[in-house]
Length: 58
Image 1 (cartoon, rainbow, N blue to C red):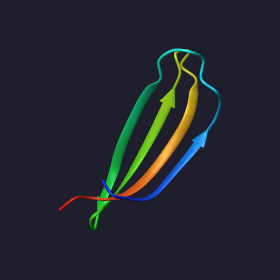
Image 2 (cartoon, helix red, strand yellow):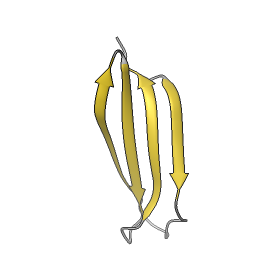
Image 3 (cartoon, one colour):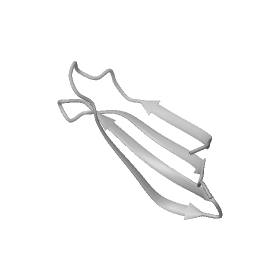
């Protein structure tokens, strides 16, 4: 999807290993969507938060 705006807030350096991720869209309106993301490390600590505003493909 074409991104209009992307913001990422890095909270901490992850411990070595896998990174978990969850992305969720609650709002789609007038051809745009707002998506929030959370990334966490193997200890379950949040390492980053994101928000993207994008154009919904026609």
